[in-house]
Amino acid sequence: MGPLRFLSVSTRQALAWRWDIAQLELGCCAGWPNPGTRRWAARARRIGVLFQTHPGRAALVFEGYTLVAAVWSRGDNDVLLSGPFVMPQFRGDGLEAKLRCLIRARDGKIAS
Image (cartoon, one colour):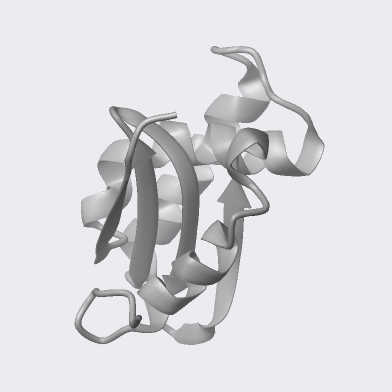
């Protein structure tokens, strides 16, 4: 595995990754969907609507160009988080805790 890149953005900025986020969420909750499935498309649409109508913060983790973990909050409730959703091969190294810290950090940086 290569180095991980952490990104803290608004949910509106994270809209570009809604398909990847939907696949990650569904994969962590119910098994990895095949590309193009209706369930995957429906979840990507709902995430897009949520990100536009309730803008909050999103913390994303990439290995290269691949989204490997994500967590986000709604603008109307920044305490309640969706996720963190982490690919199985990246679990167990504290990535979930780092994501929670990143999304709660005001400056977009993980505290050491």
